[in-house]
Length: 265
Length: 301
Image 1 (tube, one colour):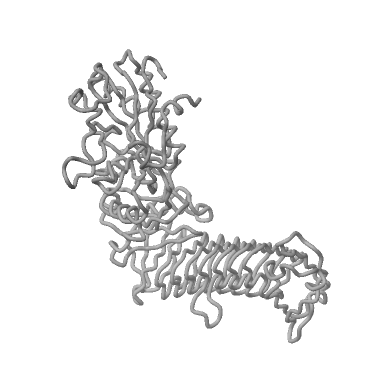
Image 2 (cartoon, chains in turn purple, brown; image 1 turned 135 degrees about the vertical axis):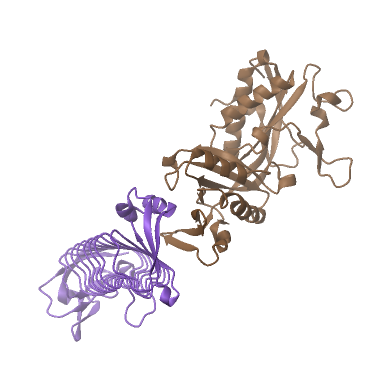
């Protein structure tokens, strides 16, 4: 598995689609072949060497030395290996990743971690709308793996989430977990309006009871053994649950026959 | 070989392959964890009549369990994987699910998967909640008391069943005291269980019977009251014999438990009324695992 470092030659004048520039797909390619890989750049295409200084990195690693919010699809489709981005990225970061690790030290645009099915994405900054959600026209959002966002997320994060884990250390915008099917989303900060609308199954963990749609019912506060288990078994959830053993359990969206839950820890 | 006046006979225990698994049962208190553990492993002394062999393996401190509560580890062994897959969910559903405050987790990660909540989750009638993070899935089942939490499945091991040794004593009291000492000492060995009541068997068996349809019958050679009536293995001074049967996750674990148990018996010694330690076998032709007493007791711990 070949590794590369990408350093932009200059500020990007148009959006760049980095689909396919992932460690597992670069495997076996020489440096020259990688430099000549073509990527969409605005309305045209360009080679990697046109846009970046390309140099060797350890096998299985892709490093983007200076991130840019015009870099779209960073890590999209990755199945193995590691990608490090020093700075922000654009939309669709980690789209449909099935394995490996994507670390972004800045902000990410919309649809970060959308349809993730395995592996791990760490975003040190904020993420835009639809983080961990479903891409346009798709029926399922994030279905496996871990998406951890140290900042806040925009609207409709975790929409149609099907499994896996999303952790937001900041706040979540409106429509969190809309049409959620399964999985777990944990938000340390505040939640926007209409959290969980259309939720079928799955769990939203939060600290403060959000404004929920009318289809949610309050089952009261319960001592839940599952909290103790999750706190110990899943490090990311342990950060929020800590030693808490009880939570207020709100179930919905019952208007649509759903049995999802919002646990206020 | 004579240790503290106790003869270690030149014999071997003959054991068989079994498949087994381990469950971690937790509860709000150590007492309820033990109640669940003992109930789940009840009526599981011998595969001959119970379908499996099971017992509490160890008491676990809160820091050793997945949910940080007191717990016990139990092991269940069966003759084949199909039987194991059948008996484990049955016992889980009847004895752990029903026991107040308990939760149940996988105690083995490797090997073929034995269903736990995968089978019994339907009791929740559609209200069961699955949670899968990483490779591990567990289920939450609403029950009248609150929620029953249980892992989806557990792994299995290809273990050893039927390791044993016999304690030949002058009196019933001496045999019992030595047995109790052995069971206490063997409790510190992980990876093994002693499936019989209190870890001790008083009715060791031989293969077959004069009666059609009986697979096993009393081991007359070691019955003191039949000395002289049958071809006895007991010298005149032996008045009582008790057996310790050991199932374990590996040959090594069973051998270590055998060593620890016999050492405890020898500590009681001739002064405590112990005459000899022997072992049960079928001539060496049936079971592939042979635990040679003198080799085991000659090994340094």
